[in-house]
Length: 335
Image (cartoon, rainbow, N blue to C red; front, side):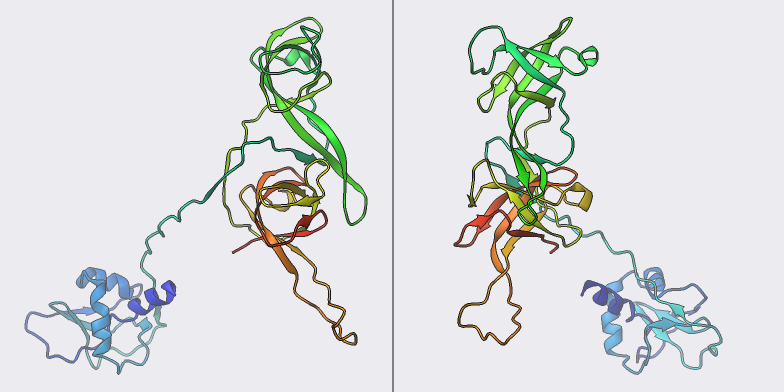
């Protein structure tokens, strides 16, 4: 609509005005390359005057073009095409729209996340940097402030001050449609920081403990905890399937986290909105001789939190009055 309005204003300029010429008028001959907007800026200094010119000059059959050789009389704040102007022998000069001011930036919508650990489904080789092998006492459960010892895969490249996320593999995840393994469900346990590099192991201190930490916890490079995400419109419409929720979770509800089979390699980005749906089945009273294609059941909406190459994590924001299950489909929202 804005484009149409701009073009309309551009077409209202060089219209004969039914008023007598004045002695102090100036005549200008249109040259190749002239535009309506440029001439208006040059002589009128007011593009807002064009609508009133149009209302007095409806006899012009095609105001969309101006022609080299046409004579224009400029007097005061008026423009007038003089009758009997030069014969048109060149192709019309296309109207060039004026520069349009950049639209005001839209308000950014930010979703603040619940304060809990976010797990993920890893479908590629885990970036396993090492393993927690022992602590400086005999306690089974380890927590914030405890000194621990880490067996690193690349001890020679490790440095004091390096931070890592502690995690554990909870369970294998299979595609609910095929039963084929697609990855493992991983849960972050906390963070640690290396304080000393020894001959065979690194000494570290646990900086935070979000869940129970025990010997055998694995390490991967630390990343800041995700606290909020800005909504972004998806670039294309994609449909995937919910792979799983949390460990042992059968049904999903509002503010639950789930994992689905679309990732960064398909263009999924944190902040993308998702619709959750399920194919609708006909009732027992439906006409059986009809090949019915019924609309899907809309179950709720979610927002993408994290992405990996082939999978992503999402948070359910709204839902209908029925639970959501693994195998339900997700579709990116492009509007």
